[in-house]
Structure formats: structure tokens, C-alpha cells
Length: 493
Ligand code: AMP
Image 1 (cartoon, rainbow, N blue to C red):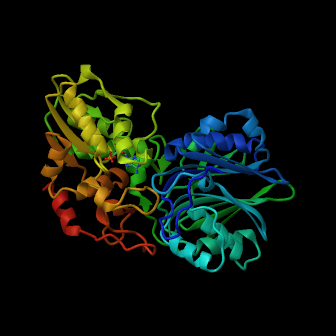
Image 2: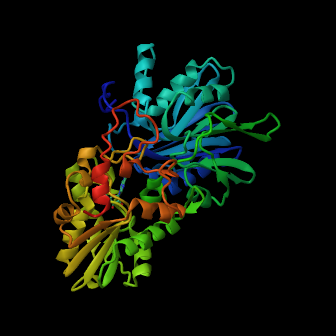
Image 3: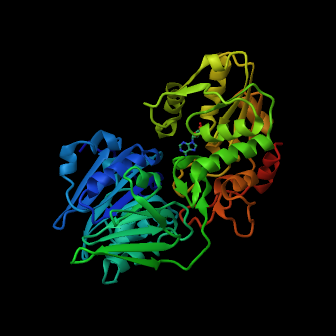
């Protein structure tokens, strides 16, 4: 079949950051889902899938590549009839890329067909998978989603929605899910709401999607965020009306949305957790300018991620904002490339210096985050080559010391730049900048939520900065929480 070899069961499951969309009761369900997925494309450019139900049969299309590459084709949309659909865009950086992992996944169960798409990662996915396989389950993919299908299949509950709830009570981690049965669209968010999920409505028909930008593209109205630990079941009744039932799958816990949605992942025009992402990013830049001021001639964003924070930095510092780097929009995100070598090459393909804005100037470069440091090293060199007299890096988030296991996919600890240097100066020298500063954790909390971190009950999950993982990590040993190091680094030592 030309597919890549199957992963060994002791290998890792896929880490995925993704986007989901679902709609019930609308005659243009597949087209609207494709449009919604197009708006969510920034959450995953590797593959896209749609499953719909036409009252008789389920139909599915799953393709590698961008939404626009396939789902604008009338012939493809004609194969997706019906008034109910769910869809998924996917991006994975570890594990292999194979069509069999592309969501939504579909299974024929005792209760009828069910399709599931999910964004995020289970922290006990591997443990559950091993148990299921030991029990005789046959797994076709390395995706966490398949585990949910198996758990639904094994549930002793009568109704599909009860089986679904039964299944997600057994999984741990960060996820937002949409599922489709013959009559229902189900949406669920993990117990502490690590991944975002919103509910909207178009012509009175319910929609669930990862971000509000997917509602905006189709002119749908935002209703509310799906709450952490909530399962919403929308069902088409025989008379065509739709009922909406909200259930709590878990004991209520305080919400802890992932801070990285604000730092990097979500689209700036989305409203995540009631906050406009662009406004939050600008505030990060303003706080950064207060915390780490610098004398310079021009503030230059590393596009696109650094742009809102650079605007905030420029406004706060009074230093002019200029587009000193031009981004080529026809190259995917650098992170998608699987090897370090190709990633480094990708950065050159993506950014070029706008010499007229750089030459002879002292430049403040603002980026949203430093992960491996690949982007910073390349860009500092590029800005120097274009004639800058000084290059100062300001990063609109704290240093990343810890890997993520909830779908953001920051890499293993030893690949993170912050872990490779024992002082900020050494890191700065490696990057080749004249100065380097990161936004403090408190600055980030203030920018996003308007108040300091409540250490007893943090308002967000910030494990990549602090090592404070918000759930247990059953599949692996938790990385060492090096608080001392963090404290030293946070003081810009
Ligand atoms: P690096 O080059 O490894 O330091 O990555 C940092 C760059 O990648 C920044 O310019 C960010 O905009 C972007 N970035 C940060 N986090 C992620 C992520 N989880 N996935 C993809 N790109 C990211």
C-alpha cells in the first residue's frame, strides 16, 4: 500500500496539535466544515479529513496536505453529502506521517457508526493502548483517537452518548473532541480545559470548533466556550428539531487553559477563553518592553508569530515599528519539517531581511518564543548580514525548559535551547545577539489574564516554563522539575 511501517507498540504515540470542527443539521455541512477547517489551518497543515452522515451512510475523505488542496474540489465535496459533518486538520512532528493516522477516525460499533476527531494528547494513551491490545484489541493506527473508539466499543452502556462519556472518563490529558453518530454531534473538553473548544451557531444549527476564527469565516455566531470537563450532546430528532444536552463527564476542577495558545498557537483574531489573542499578544510585548527595555532605532517582528508582541513593544517603548523581515507565505511553518537539517533550511526559505529598514540600525527583534533556537540563530545572522549595527532579541514568553505532552509538542528537554546553556549570557552568545531577554512568567500572566500567577491554583497550565504538569503523566516519568535553574534564569542571570 506504500504506507510507512507501523510503529512498534513500545514506541511513542503521535504528538499532535490539531484543529477540529463539527456541525449538525445544516444542508451544507461538508462545505461549511471545509471552510471552518481552512480557518483552522494554522493548527495543522499536514493532513485534513472530513466525515459526514447523509441519513443512510457515513462518508469520509482523508487527505494529506492542505484543506484548500482537496476540499475546494466540487467532486470531493459531492462525495460528502448530508447535513452533519465533522472535520480535522492535523500536524504532527513526532511519529510517522501516514494516511491511517489522519482523522476523523471511524468505526462501526454495536451502537452504529461513530466518527471521532480530536485535538490534543492523552497522557495515559499508551498505557490504555497496551491494556487494550493485551485484551485482544486490534489497533490500525498509532493515533490516540483510536483508543477512544475502542473504549466506546467496550462500554457496557446502552446509548452512544453514555458510552462516549464512559470512554472519556478513562482518558487523561489535554483534549478537545468532536464525534458524530447517526443522529448526534458530540463535543467534549478535557477536565481542566487545556485545549480550547467553542460552541457556535449558524441558521440555528450547532457548531463546535477549536477557535472562533472558524465561526467567523462562515458568518456563524459564537455562543460560548465548551466548559472544561463538559460533554455537549446535540441530537437531531425525528421531526428535524435539534436538542442540546450538557453533561459533566468529570468532577468539576478549575480550568487551566494552555498558555501556549496565547503565546503561539491560536490565530490572533480568535477569542480564546474570552480573551482576544491579538490583544493578549500585544500586552505581552508591552510587558516585555517594561521588563527589558533597550535603546534601539527600530522594533522588528519575527513574522508572523512575533508581530502583535512587536507592535506592543514598539508602542510601549516609543521605538518605531518596521517590517524588517519579510516572510514568504508559501512555505509552511518551520516546525513541520521533521529533521533539524531541513528545519534550518526551512527558516531561510521563509524569512528574508528588508535591508532598507535594517542597515545601519540598532534592531530589537521580537519573537513569540524560542524553542530549539533554530529560528533565532538564523535570523540574527540574517539581520547582521543586512547591516544592522546591533541586534537585541526580546522574546514574548518565558524560557521553555520542559517538554509538552498535551498537544503543543515542544520537543524533549535536551533539545530545548534553555536547557543547553547555564546562563542567559551564554545563550545570547550562542544566538549571536547583543542582548537577549525573555518575558517573565508573571508578565505573561498579567498580559493574558490581568493578574499574577496564583501558585496555589494556577489559572493556566504553564508546564513548559515551570515543570508544573497539570495532570499525572502515566505514560512516562515526569521530567525533573529544576526549580532552582528556573529561578536563576528568570532573574536573567
Ligand atoms: P525554534 O526555532 O525551535 O526556537 O522555534 C521558535 C519559533 O517557532 C518561533 O518563531 C515560534 O513562532 C515558532 N513556534 C513556537 N512554538 C511552536 C510550536 N509548538 N510549533 C510550531 N512552531 C512553534
